[in-house]
Length: 379
Ligand SMILES: Nc1nc2c(ncn2[C@@H]2O[C@H](COP(=O)(O)OP(=O)(O)OP(=O)(O)O)[C@@H](O)[C@H]2O)c(=O)[nH]1
Ligand SMILES: [Mg+2]
Image 1 (cartoon, rainbow, N blue to C red):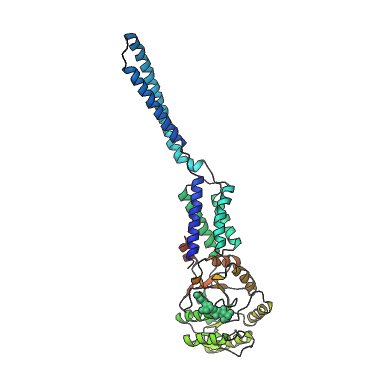
Image 2: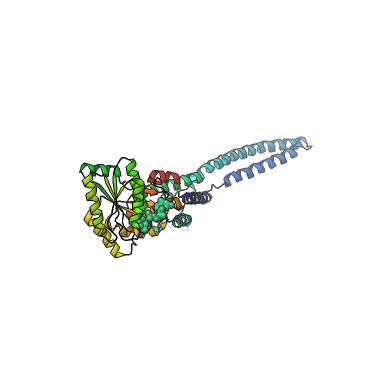
């Protein structure tokens, strides 16, 4: 899942830290000066040896001896200087990367643009990618860092920003069921969303998930609008052994859900899972119908079922559906989405948790969303 997204992020971080490494490379010049000085000193020593080795008179010898003494003095001084330069070269090699060059705003803007592009290409909404990039810039600006440090700083900054976005307050379905139970009633969960996003399949998967936990459920066939929608839910109900409460096509969906809740409450059933017709977020009539369902039945949880592959459209869709005050999101078809940015965009825009993810067409291909696991798997 999200394989390409993880790879692209990793590549972008590598590229970024490589550029930072180039920018903050230590200046090697003191080491070079030291080598040149050493060479000069050796040449001088060789010249003196030749001079001292030739045939000379006593006077010349005396004057050469005094010259040699002064030469030895000069060599000592040169040697001392050389040691100092050597020491300075070594010291500056350690300190230079930390103290000499800092990462300027212009440099960071330039290199972080690449990262922003990667995020945008992977369905991370612009506001979200801008926030991630701004957070990293804040942590790097004015610093002078080595490659390994840059990599760590970038990864930590991205990790903390992405975790912060994904870690919305969880919807605890088990406690919600238990709390409804203690009030002697069934918990009502309404699934809503765009056409074909996976609502009916998700209801079937949630039914199986709850039954596996020992809860009893009924389905409310409240998509009385689309041809064959009722039969589709009945097909799942029959397979799973879950009763479907239905009426004829064209019946008010609010009334169908009302009946299903009454049925569940009278039989001590724990959860009512209500289907609804797929609607385009721009169709005001269908949105008004949705609001009526909510007004009449007051669902405990309203979950938006949205396709991971819908790309940046998810943000616009989600905003409109949030007019009914969503409690969370089910992100479907993550198995066929390599990008993964939708999860981030949704959480950031809605400030609501992703409760489940659909990872395939089978009932069992459905998991509770774990933000920490997702972040850890990216980095
Ligand atoms: N690969 C994959 N396919 C899925 C997933 N969830 C649903 N689907 C498929 O998506 C298609 C549409 O699913 P439905 O459950 O009918 O969607 P819907 O939102 O109820 O559709 P409408 O009622 O027409 O609005 C079906 O072929 C499902 O099998 C998923 O997590 N992964
Ligand atoms: Mg459906």
